[in-house]
Length: 296
Length: 298
Image 1: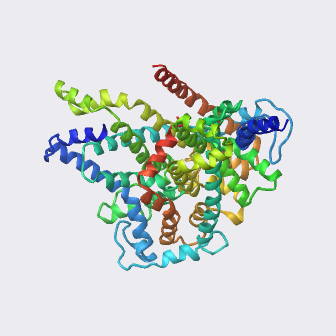
Image 2 (image 1 turned 30 degrees about the horizontal axis):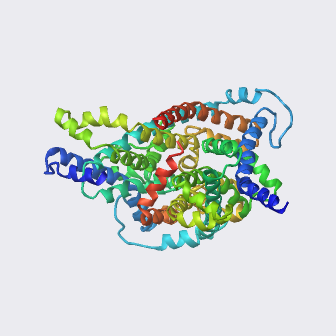
Image 3 (image 1 turned 90 degrees about the horizontal axis):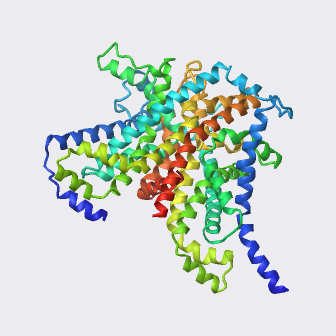
């Protein structure tokens, strides 16, 4: 229907009348506004400091330098420690990978169990979980700190992973529940009659059909967890601080001269992973937004 | 006997599989909320105290100037942020929907900020808006020596800079959601409107926009949750300053939990935040579930 609609609409007149020019003028100026910060980040990160101090923020660099990028990566100071933000990069990676895998696995099992198996009380649990998606994190932070401390997981890698699994569960479960709800019940019944058990049907029948939703879920979790700040700040501990926290430390807690070029290089470096995912995944990313939005 | 046991085990497996979810829901969500509620009714400071002081902390909270300022800021921020995102997102979606060339590129450009963290967003805009080297200075160098754009260090305007930065980050999201909604609208409407000679903008405002209701609702819910969460962007951009001009509740709570060691007051604040969410989101959910069930019964 959509394609027919597009074809129909393309038959509408498309010559350059004033309205058409207006449309493009609006879109182009909007695009410039959206691109402006990216442009400023890039040119600032390539300028030497004295050029920044004297010059215009919009100007292209007169002498291009990549030194700020090297400094940002390997020798910028976060507090007393001058190791750059590369440590944060590896920390973020170490947090993102297990958190994403675990939350997708749990979300898939939950969604599968909720869609096909009649477990008593599961519907109620799911309802509470969906409401949980709206609870401000601040309500849960202090008790979670206490719980993790009691489990000796506070300020540790497994601890922050567990936290991301907890906060990711509502959306992940919803995503998979909705996906499995669209799979014909007959398929499941046939597998049952053939003697398949809970996990056998899950692993051999459901998972192989789940690739699209797993991709969507992975995109959502990787970008979401990579961009997280508050949870990493509270739960990760000094040795596991994610890149976002280190970035903020580099920029907002440095004493002495502020190296704006280094700051901007560090900001780009921190954003590189989610931005690449966005650019590569394209429509999948948008699909994730739409799927996650169903929670409303 | 063995067959019976196997049957029992089979019935038990789904429950076992749902155990992690049950644990997280009961302890992670329900338990922590009740815990915070309990702490908010105690006199705890650095360590939890197991007494009961009624609503004392709430009274203290609403006598706290910083909290009141945070609430006021959040209300102002929420209204401006949601309104601006919806308007800009709607305009972008409608203009993109005019069969423009380069649609893919435009969509990518409008949505890429959404892939960036609030921390990065805040830091970029802090740099753009700083009066010494940022936009203000650039415009002055272009010859407008009196140009002033120092909102980020202005007590009365700092909050607006956070609006600008986060609208830049999130309005692409609204565009994506509404564009999907627009593409789902029946083309017949356009034919009918053309036959009746209704101007395009009228059709968008009076016919299409109401039909986009569910998409707008979705966008609203997503934006609203972002408003309540507002923390990273403030920390990155202004640290709540100048003074307490851009303090927000989430930051107030975090500061009192960790910096100022007043967990009871912080918990009271967090419960107030939760109540706000319930009051604003619950009616919307209710309305949507009614619409959903009506559709289902058809």
